Image 1: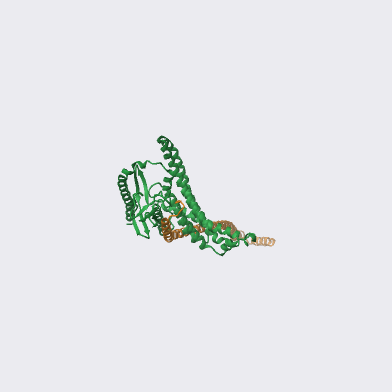
Image 2: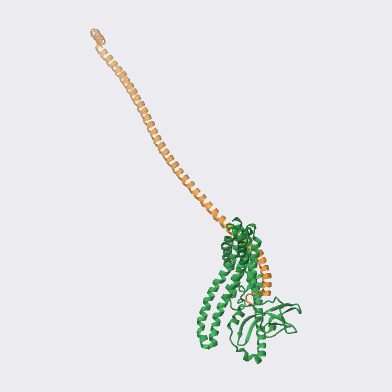
Amino acid sequence: MKLNIRRLVFDFLIFGTGLLLSTAQVKANEADTLSNKSEQPEKKEAFKPGEIIFEHIGDSYSWPIATFKDVEVAIPLPVIVYSKTSGVHVFFSSKFDHGHASYQGLEIAKEGKEKGKIVEVQPDGTTIKPIDISITKNVLSLFISLGLMLWMFISIARRYVREPDKAPKGLQSFLEPLILFVRDDIGIPSIGKERHEKYMPYLLTVFFFILINNMMGLIPIFPGGANLTGNIAVTMVLAILTFIITMVSTNKGFWVHIVNTPGVPWWLKLPVPLMPFIEFSSSIVIRPFVLMIRLFANITAGHINVLSFIMLIFIFGAMKPAIGWSFSPFSVAFVVFIYFIELLVAFIQAYVFTLLSALYFGMAKEESHH
Amino acid sequence: MELITPGFGLLFWMIISFLIVWAILKKYAWKPILNALKNREKSIENALHSAEKVKAEMEKLQADNQKLLAEARVERDRILRDAREMKDRIIEEAKILAQTEGKKQIDAARESILNEKKAALKEIKDVVAVLSLQVAEKMLREKLSGEASQGEYIDKLLNEIKLN
């Protein structure tokens, strides 16, 4: 019975995706037959690799799959927008026709500060920014990865409950060493044997969230390909959560250490609170900020790297197709090389983020016995 | 700078969904998994510990066995020695008994032989005495047919007896 439901869900996902794809294609076809008449000469415009790269690592209202000649194939995603003037709008992003059309007074800004975002066009021609909680490419990717995590860990947890003393098998034997790694090499050494248990759920969730999304970001097509852990909003939420947990875990010793650092001459503290200021900024302000930037920058840089090497082919190709073709093997070789490094980085960044979080949790109390 | 400006939509969904997933995983995945791992480790540790204990016990048992074996060996040797001694003693005793018994029998035999000899000698003496009496009677009848010779003979006999 259980197996049937799973199969059903699986079929639905595959079928659903296929359906979305096909509708997207049809829409795209229609759009192109319409737009081809007027925009034909414009399309052969100058090739801008920078824009393409930033389009790929950024967010988008639909999930682009490929562009065949002039047909853009993308999975349309739901747009959810609330505007003070016109209320709530919910519709599929295919209504925008890849940014070419406006719908219900909304459109994707083509230039200006809000470029690429949905704006509402006022009757007088100016645009305002509505509250936008659309299910974008990154949001869907977030849901997919979180769903994957729920499925993976709840399914293996069931076996831990049912047959706790059996040797791990299948997915469990793949994940158990990682779980043990987070516990034995991150949690226990950084926080300590007695206190680590309270923090393990957060550390494990963050570790696997970052690892899975880093990996999925490396898959070029549909369920992967979003630059989620390279998005500052995502890393900001993770860093803020680490910060909040650290602050909640602090004790008196931690604050005494910041305000009145032991072993430092009094004149560094008294007339001008130089030392408290340094301590405060280094152990409170900078920590979450660095966590946020490190993960974001590493993953985004990886994506930019891969895309740049791909773009090189087209830059050379734009000079002369033959040069582009002949350069492509080198480019592919470099991309493969970068991909292997990125696999390593995917793991290292998950490890570093989790390790630093754990260290901060550990330090929130450890400093009391100075 | 879109890249470093966090988008509100993503921020919103990220906070909500991450917190929900964290809570669900904490309750339905991490707690059971970590508990199971801890319990498993504990049981492995216990198993190792008890294996160690059993090993020590085995060693002790083995030592005990060895001791018992050695004791048994000593006991066996002692029993064998005792048995041998007993055997020797019994043989010795039997020998002595046989000797004394034999001696006693020989003595008795010797005594009875002596007695028989004495009896035989006495009988011989008696027979000889009778025979000599008879001979003497016959001779006397012969000789004492004349009166003169009778007196003579009696004198002679008397003389002889006196001499004896």
